[in-house]
Every structure is written in C-alpha cells, then in structure tokens.
Image 1 (cartoon, rainbow, N blue to C red):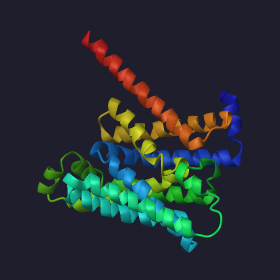
Image 2: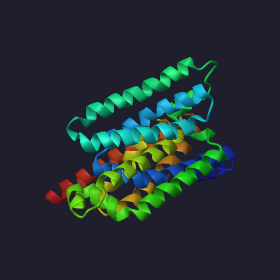
Image 3: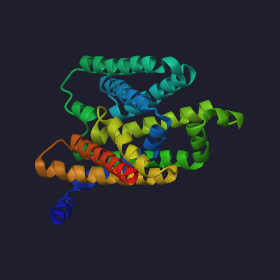
Image 4: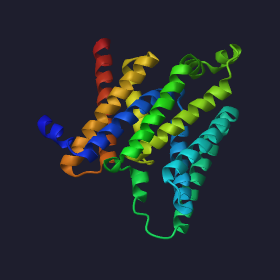
Length: 276
C-alpha cells in the first residue's frame, strides 16, 4: 500500500496536490489555533462564504476569481471583525446576514455571466487535483505573509486571545491587532478554498487545531501539531480519494473528522481510567 502511494506521487498533478495540501496545512495550523482559542469559528465560516461574492464578480468582470475572493474575503473580514468587536451581543446575527449577502452577490453575478462556468464547483467543493504551479506560488506567498504576521506579533496576538481587557491596560492596540488576525484568517480561507472548497473550509481550519488543543496547551506546540495533523489528513485523504475514486476535498475532511472523533474517544477513556 505504501509503495503504491509513493508511486502515485510520481504524477505531476498529484505532486502539485500534495504540495498544496502541505502549504495549506501550515497556514491552517497557525490560524486554526487562533480561531479555536478565540472561539471565532463562526466568523471564519462567514468569511469563507462571503468570499463567494468575489468569485462571482471575478467571473462577471473577467478577472481571476481567486483575486476577487482575496479582495472580498479581506473586505468581509474587516467588516465582520469590526462588528464582532463593537457589538458582540448581536454579532452572530449581523455576521450571518453578511455571510448570506456575500453568497447571494456571488450567485447573482454568476447568473449574469454568459457562458458555461466549467470550474465553478471547484470553488465550492475544492479541486486539489487541478491546482496549477501558479497557485502553489500564490499559496507559498500567502504562507510567508501569514507566518510573518504570527512571528512579528505573536506575543500581542496571544495577549488579545486570552485576555483582551488586560491587553488594553497594557496599551496594546487591541482592535487593530484583532483586525489583522481576521485578515490573516481571510487569506488562509482563500488558500483552503482550492483544496477543500468554501463549503468545507471551516473543517480544515478548526479540526486539526481542535484535536491539538486536547493534548497540548502551549500555543506554539499547538500550531506545530495542528500543521502536522493537517499534512497527515491531506496526504491520507488524497491517497484514499484516488484509490476509491472519491472527491478529494470531502475525503480529506472525513479523515480529519474521523480523527477528531477518535481523539474525543481517547480522551474520554483516559479520563475514565484516571477516575477509577
């Protein structure tokens, strides 16, 4: 089985797919950790679905839909971040509305675009097997930007994640830092879009981090473990989807979800054993 899997990656499209999975896993490991710690999964989902508006505009105005997704994701992220910071008691409703509006805008623009939209479904459900080298370069660049943000502002991001009130007393620009984190999440969403699609983006962002959070508490260790798990899930999912002729993005998420259920069962068994 291992030999067949190694032979599989002799094909260029599989090597590109594997590299895309590895690059996305790095970003998801970093941003997913902050998403889980800050409990902002809903915002991440809102950004992912609102990005569809940018894809629709890209189709209609004849420019790269990925660039449209980046612009729309960042704009939506800033709006949702401001809403969350300023009106937390009603943020879920407002973000839900923005989520729906973004999707609706994308659908309307696509309806108005003449011709057959051949690769439209790849943005919704992912198409990791068709990732070109140009997208790999874009993913590498986004990884660098996200990694640089985490490296330069790690202490500040940790501070606002665990105690934003204390961070404000230390004269940290909490709102600006929070918006920067949300923008970094938006960039990650665009990366994940090509691998598992906008529909499943939340899962790959949160599942590896959720598993890691059960076993490690240090944020740096959590990021490393999350990235490693993401790489394992994408590689296994790719192999399984190829051998059984399944959709790659959905298979990757199923592997991750199964691992999460196993981790919960393992933690429960350990807890019960300690209580006996």
